[in-house]
Image 1 (tube, helix red, strand yellow):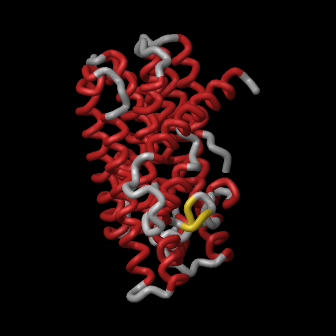
Image 2 (cartoon, one colour; image 1 turned 180 degrees about the vertical axis):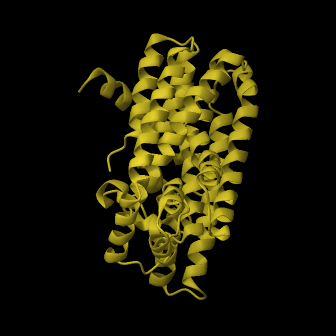
Image 3 (cartoon, one colour; image 1 turned 180 degrees about the horizontal axis):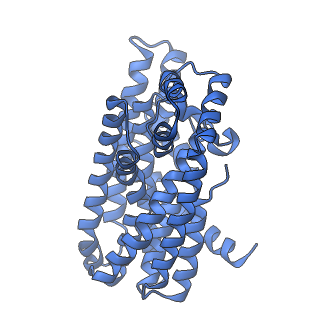
Length: 355
């Protein structure tokens, strides 16, 4: 294992241990069989992921001079609970069946209702239970953050960033719904949704949290780094996600091939496609996009149009441009050499996830 890989694996191990210890003591009435499905759903949802958000937070902390203490792993790990909350709610809104190769939370609870033969609508029960699970994870995220054990001055300095990040995420979720309702989108409008819904809280704000926690204040160079580096990596991260949502291998993404197309996601990739498509191609995209019964042939047709219009190539080129600009901004930041190396690795990992 390389030094870089070992460093990332050690960070994941610390984050997963902190999550496990926190969730273990959260539910009231331990062993209550009625509450156990909530715990199981939370555990399995938290078991996956690359831990990028905690990693950006941790290396922000180290970059601004923070030491390698257990409390920073707890604070950083709380971002995984926020992410899990967003995923549960996102799957309900999108009516997704799978998450990371397993039934989405609302489908899991729906199956529980159906198997038990309970009264009422199994689908409504599943959605209601999933919404409550998402709310629970959101509450736990805030609690884990507040009780991380970091100095009070650090938490107070970073709290406005933490609050703003959660507000951005919720507004991004609403803008995503609005984008689908509008039906047509531009690259700029899709970019705005991607930034608020994913890019900022995946990279920019976790990095800012770590920096401010370590310094116990927010100074101008931090914002320069978070915007110049973090925002660009966040956009590249979301562009890569757009591509994976259409061309990704289900074994890697944990979702059926072309699932974003069935859900009618108005992504930056789709916006680029419609902008460059011939009238006939555009009509085909509009007709097939969002069809929940879209079959393999329909997915292949849309993929071909996306490639033929040059939208896929354009998005790949944009990812490369954003990454290059981000790394140039990182070079200007007064952070530790170890953090510089780690953030470089993270930026590459976030924008070049395997399709």
